Length: 395
Image (cartoon, rainbow, N blue to C red; front, side, top):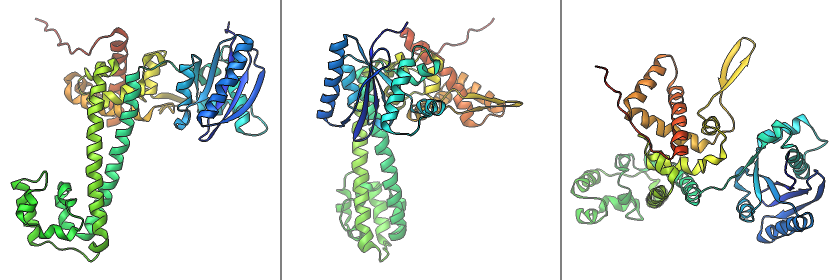
C-alpha cells in the first residue's frame, strides 16, 4: 500500500523549471514555471506549502538532475524536509516511447513525471525510473566538488601545455628540452630576453639551482628564435604563467582533499585498500556519497561501471557496457584497481590469469574490480578496513 502524499514533478532547465503538483490520487492540482532565481524558489515552496497545509499530507518531489541545473533547488528541497527523487532521464525517455504523446514539450514532460510518480508503487519500471535521494555526509559532498574541480584544472593544464609546446616548436625548438623551466620561461615578458640573462640572474629565478643554471647557459650559447617570436613569444610566456598558476591551484586543492579524506569515513576505508591513493579514494567517496543510494553491491558495481551486462539474442551471446554509469567514478576505480594489482601479489596473479584467458587489459582490470566492489561493500557495511591476510602454511 502506497502512503498518500502530495507529488511534485520538476522538469529542470538551465534558466526556468516547469513544475507540476499532483494530489494523492494522481490528479494534477496545478502546473506552473519558475525562473532559476531566489524569487522563483520562494514561489516554488509557497505553492507547495499551500497544498500541503490544505491537504495535510507529506510532500515528495521528483526532479531531473542532469547537467547540474537542479542545484541549489535540490538541496533546498531536502532541507525543507521533503522526500527527493531523482528522475532517470534515459528511462523516462523509454516511458515516453511506450506511452507516446501528441507532442514533446516541457509541460508534457512534467505530466509524464507525475504519471510515473503515481505508478511508482504499482509498476516496476516506474520504481526504476524514480530513485530516492538519501542524505549525503557533508564531507563527501565537499570531496565531490573539490575532486571535480581538480580534474577540470588538470585537463586545462594539459591543454595549455600542449598549446605552449606547439608554439615553442615553431619559435624555438631547443627550448622544448627545457619545458621543466616553467619559472624560467615566465621570468621575463620578452622571450628573447631569456637568451641574454646573466648566470646571476638565472640563479635568482626560483627553482633553478647550479645544475639547471648550467643547462640554461648551454642553451643560451646557441639560442635562436624564428621571426614569429615577436608576437608568439608573449603567448608562450602567458601560457607558462598560466601553467604555474594551475599547478599552484591544483596543489592547494589536493591539500584540502587530503584533509577532507581524514574526515570522511568512506574515504578512509577506501584508502586502506592497497593501491587506492588519496585522489582516487576521494573521487570515489565524493561520487558514491553514501551506500544508502544502492540496494546491493551489484547496484554499486553497475554505478561504477564494473558490471558488464549480458547481451544475448538467439545463438549470439555477449556483453555490453551499462549506460547508467558514473564516468568519473569509473575512471577513478580503474586507476585505483590498476595500482592495486601491482601492489598485491594475489591480485596480480588473478589479473595474469585473466590475461592468459584472452581478456584485454581493461577487461582483466574490470574483472578484478568486480571482486573489489564486493570487498568495498562489506568493508563499509561492517565498518572495517582492508586486511591483507597471509595464506597459512600446510605442513
